[in-house]
Length: 62
Image (cartoon, rainbow, N blue to C red; front, side, top):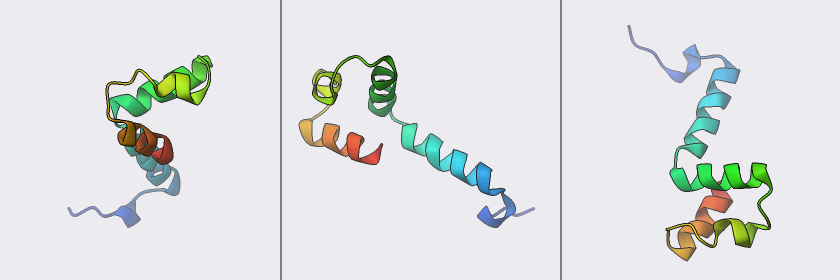
């Protein structure tokens, strides 16, 4: 049986898109730190072990 995107409910598609957005450890770290309100954005991302341009990209994606 072949399955395509039309076979899924809108909520299932939205959840899958959301999960793909969070599917990187840096993005998860940013979200957890924001939820804990551990300071401003610069303080939250400054110590992530990724390049500066990637930090900006991760924030843009979120």
